[in-house]
Amino acid sequence: MRELQSEIVEEMGVKPEIDPAEEVRRRTDFLAEYLQSVGARGFVLGISGGVDSSLAGKLCQLAVEKLRDQGVDASFHAMRLPHGIQKDEDDAARALEFIGPDHTHTFNIEKAVTGVDVAFTESFGRNLRDYHRGNVKARLRMTAQYAVAGEQQALVVGTDQGAESITGFFTKHGDGGADVLPLFTLNKRQVRQLLKHLGASEPLYTKAPTADLLDENPGQLDEAELGISYDHIDDYLEGREIPADEAEKLERRYLATRHKRTVPVSIQDQWWRD
Ligand SMILES: Nc1ncnc2c1ncn2[C@@H]1O[C@H](COP(=O)(O)OP(=O)(O)OC[C@H]2O[C@@H]([n+]3cccc(C(=O)O)c3)[C@H](O)[C@@H]2O)[C@@H](O)[C@H]1O
Ligand SMILES: Nc1ncnc2c1ncn2[C@@H]1O[C@H](COP(=O)(O)OP(=O)(O)OP(=O)(O)O)[C@@H](O)[C@H]1O
Ligand SMILES: [Mg+2]
Image (cartoon, rainbow, N blue to C red):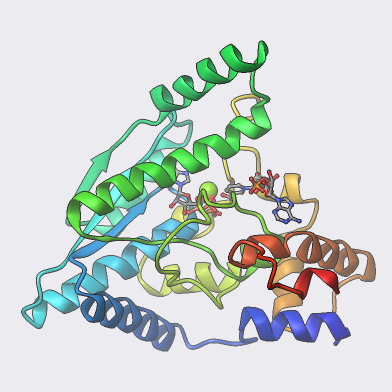
């Protein structure tokens, strides 16, 4: 294994092989035990129709059902957070049907995004670029989830997993802003494996990942933006060999996005000097 690869594999904690039943149990227990130990009353999570939120949502629902069986008051709030009309709304409906959440709230972020657009244009005399608007959408989804979490005394769930973490392919303080991360240490194919194990339908567990943040390119596939395939990212995280140019590309991304995987850099920190 490459030297940096072994450090990254250790940091991300991805195992080359998993037992899906055991992983579901461990992650559901983690959610249930953490919720009970902090005395919160439930979980909040945006459901997009993608594989990560479909799995994380199902684990949340299983965790609160387990707590209720033990007499603890807990519930799961699934949030649909479209920007206007979502192109793959059918997939989001399929995900909700699979999860069977206690509560579903629809919170359309379009007006809030428009509010930022208007203020930006007033301030700078031009429009905010589509790419940066995409990150505004992710941060407004985070804001909406925290508004509900505050009202419900609940925790915000994040869907960060190994393949996303290593590439820094998330919006800092957007979808990266959350309280608990039940998918951490899984790679993308393991997320699909757990969904299949839990009885998700094939279109749900095989859905191609999209951040879907751009008005100018709705449903753009992550792999097109990343320029690296999830198969290669997953292989790398399982400690396997991938083509050297791909490994280098991945490692450059990993190093450039270290700031996203730490708390804000302070005068005490030295890690960035390496
Ligand atoms: N070295 C450094 N030390 C400390 N902070 C640093 C920094 N470099 C940038 N920053 C800060 O970070 C900001 C850039 O980070 P960020 O705002 O996240 O922006 P950025 O990384 O440019 O964009 C987010 C990327 O993640 C993708 N994404 C987002 C959301 C969801 C998904 C998905 O898969 O669903 C994917 C999105 O398509 C895009 O490629 C800068 O504006 C700056 O404030
Ligand atoms: N349109 C949306 N409605 C609700 N939540 C959303 C929406 N878009 C993004 N999110 C939230 O942001 C998270 C990050 O998006 P991301 O695309 O990484 O995950 P995903 O859509 O669940 O899976 P995939 O990566 O396979 O597309 C989602 O897991 C979800 O919680
Ligand atoms: Mg997505």
